[in-house]
Image (cartoon, rainbow, N blue to C red):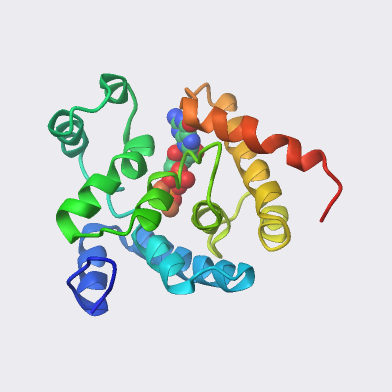
Length: 198
Ligand code: GDP
Ligand code: FE
Ligand code: FE
């Protein structure tokens, strides 16, 4: 039986994820589960909590847009959210679906999942662990991922800054809009990259 409000065995939960995710994304969430557990052990955070957040972070990634538009309507959320898309919705709104569908009720896990794509100006250690585990899991392969892996295990704030700056560069290069929270994360952490500790 899982904890944190989830009334399912791990086996049943894995079956559900495998059914609602593509094969490559199912592998990704298992990798993020493991990387989040490793980071939590490294930083003295609760490894089981980090692992579950990692396992569930992309729960809503393959849901159709209609599901998210329905969440915005049912929960009377800011209408501006309708202007974004799955990349933003699957985390920011995915937490409503995790509560409704699975009963997940741990506020720290829910917050880390809510923030996993866009971050926040004031992230908890668990938030940073999930944000970075998603970015550096073993299947990730892009210029800079090795540096992100080193930073993730040496300085969480610098790693968040590095990952957010890279994500923004990538979005700018593709002429994509930047979600305001992503810019808040960038502004809150970027100066740490100029400090010389670790
Ligand atoms: P994934 O779900 O494992 O693929 O990873 P993420 O949840 O971190 O990111 C999902 C996608 O959202 C990626 O393609 C990011 O580049 C993109 N993304 C991250 N921040 C923003 C943002 O501020 N605006 C937009 N438009 N996309 C973003
Ligand atoms: Fe995601
Ligand atoms: Fe992910």
